[in-house]
Length: 218
Length: 313
Image 1 (cartoon, each protein chain N blue to C red):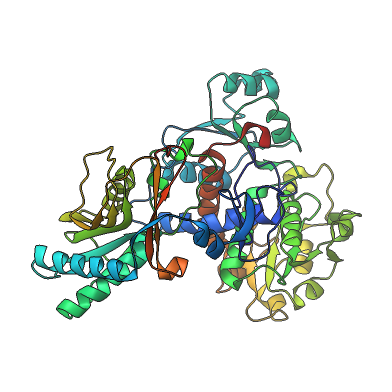
Image 2: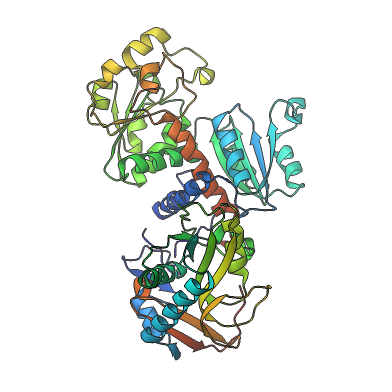
């Protein structure tokens, strides 16, 4: 779909978008390159973290019978796919990966500003009595996970739901805790955590960016 | 980013290509919701939607109602019969009273062209035009476009023929606006009495010969003979109309084998379309109805989901 430049309300050439951070039109790659901050995980660290999580999932569940990985759009999906690959290396069995979009389950949908684009949920395997592992990139307030659990429950009654995240940055607002964590990183509200994944952003990296204002929590 | 900023959906004419694309793309996500076992998401919980139908409707009214309920909005219906409109209350007074009950969205079907535009000035709620006289029927055009895109993979470059009562059809007008914006080639066809004399000015090919209209068509859309909108009869007889313009298997032999048959409903079987065509393998008429729910969910979501900047509309 052709995107519109917010500022000029003109169609933008393909590949460009209006970057609010910088106030100019640029490519996604350029914006990503301009996010400066402290690198807390590089490609190798992300890989090691995911490998360990894969082992923990297999160990915790005593195998991979009845396991379904659910990637939360958008960066949870490639993470879930990578976890499934590692699990296959360990156990020699393919674990189904499905994806959910939580937009319609958000508790802040009507106060958020313009409508978020709705992604397509694809739960094409039965989840009744399965062990669901939700996969997301950053665990923050826990509200996304609450929405994801509600969404999953509408597709059936899983026997259990577990949670795997690449980064846990703290600041929970709901009684939610991750079962598998790539890296625990206590942060302040004047910091932003950016996860870049090769499948979406062209590089594998986790960066903590210093902000000069407090984040409005979503 | 493409973002929805409008309060109302009054017609296709006011929409940009990007907005049309946004609605169609968003509808993909909602088609998936309608395919679930539990066809319900909490997106519009707590929102109030009033279905105000001044003219009879089966598909549009139910489709909006189903769409709103699947998004968890509360829906209320009001029709001409059974309301104080029959006691002589004016449309504007009716809307002011509805407004006092704090609705978030009013879906209006009315026999007067421009009625939704008028009421949108009297209410804070969003207004959706569900058909205003012979003017526009934007959600129908959007669900038609969605169906064409689904069946043909694109809209740009498609040859679309609209055949029948062009003069009295709001569906035609909305479809012409939309298809022109999205780059399809539109042909309208009907008896001369059903072709407004300036219709070519909308940028369409005009013909009175069905054979000519269907020859290169990828999409053949039959239009209903709107007997309720005609003061004077413009046809010698329905039988004769069927012979010349009604779509039959025989006439279809001249069309492309992969052309699809559409009809906005309600159908007059044996007048503009033969039953064997309506139920034939190329007919996508009931799929249009299914897609209508997804498209209307997308529209409700876009109008009610986010917050709007007050000065953008």
